Length: 101
Image (cartoon, rainbow, N blue to C red; front, side):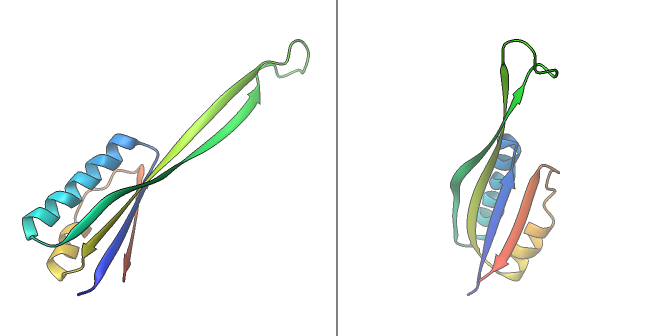
């Protein structure tokens, strides 16, 4: 039996968890073996920016941060399961990559 490795990436944690829940529900309904979702390390992108545009005065800084959350799911790649996975409505903020192993 082949397995499908699904990688989910998003900046919005709640929408990512909703998609993981939908995948878990599909696996439970069809009765296939599923491992995950495994939380991968969160990537933090930080950008320090000077508050004053002219460069005069006290140097004060704003710090902006974007967090990228990732999940990894392995699921048995039966044809009916893969068709159901392809029909899931995925929000724009969530990026999905599927790799057959």
